[in-house]
Length: 284
Ligand code: NDP
Image (cartoon, rainbow, N blue to C red):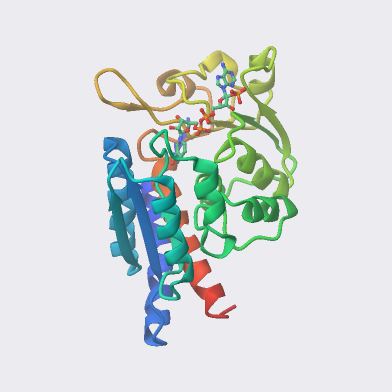
């Protein structure tokens, strides 16, 4: 028998905690504020931005949207970020990725300095995560940790295998599991005999970007399986990186897609905005 990890329930719990803290801050005259920038009209980006704005409304965080045309130059975008960095009423800045091809994403990430980098992508925040001394968490990986905590799943001493090594998911996921005293293996496209590693995992995190990539034969009986993947099938439905129907029979816990890691990413974004606001206002 497996337990379904309910990301909607856990994200609602996290957002409720944020909301209570935001109300306390408002009573002190402090209004947490997140600026969200979107360039162009990519439909998936529009959905993500709308979901982030909804989460701000649900938690009482003020949101500002800057919707820029696809032909916006890099210079114009960097000028906006510079203005928002200097604006004391803005606590967090998020620029929805991907950006149009003529804009250098690295330059944009570098322009959002650590104190307002609520995605946790800046060099400084990435370094702090590896040092175990951070206020801003990487949103998706910390969402996974929140799920594990909520269900009382300990990481300590467990074999943790992360499939995927991207800067936004795989690498920071490995750092957080290591911080929790897991024994961490990171696999990627050049890993030989991948199933040998995944089948030894007590906690398996899939962040590959390939629908139903992790099949039951790759999973250890009783493992905890976390599916970060969000893949669009030809019929338009969302599908994870894990072959849910077969894997669920073999594992102890599993996240669904949708309704697993996705809602957690946004809940952690709200937590990060709150943390940035408190830090900027010298509140411990
Ligand atoms: P990337 O494409 O940046 O990274 C994918 C990783 O998977 C790479 O490290 C790649 O290895 C590895 N990989 C690809 N093929 C294989 C293979 N055959 N065997 C082993 N490893 C392989 O993706 P992201 O990390 O950005 O995202 C991963 C998934 O998570 C996507 O479906 C994305 O949509 C989803 N996602 C979900 C979020 C959420 O909120 N739930 C947030 C962010 C992402 P290599 O480095 O060698 O190329």
